[in-house]
Amino acid sequence: MSLAIAPVELPRTSEYPPPSNVRAERNGDQVTILWEAVPIPDPKMIYSESRYFLELRLCRGGEVSDALLGTNELRVTIADEAGCAEPSGEQISTATCEGYSLSTVIP
Image (tube, rainbow, N blue to C red; front, side, top):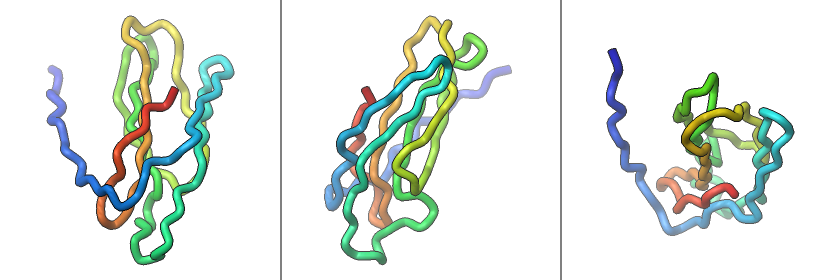
């Protein structure tokens, strides 16, 4: 039995940009994604749970799977194996109390 994943439309805001200088560094099956901080001058607009939101498409055990990750850090390391028929892919956006910025594709 498989479950269909319902697409979710995130609330978007143009008040804040997505992170810049986004880059990925691969070391075997480990990928470290790094970016620069997005200034948010009003502390009330900072979403305390996670300031950055990553949408990930990863290869694990020969199967592509989707994952979501929220973090306040400026880098994350994820497992992304070789061997999937479809390519992996990631994107990142800034999370605020108003919503999410437009996403930046992680190269």
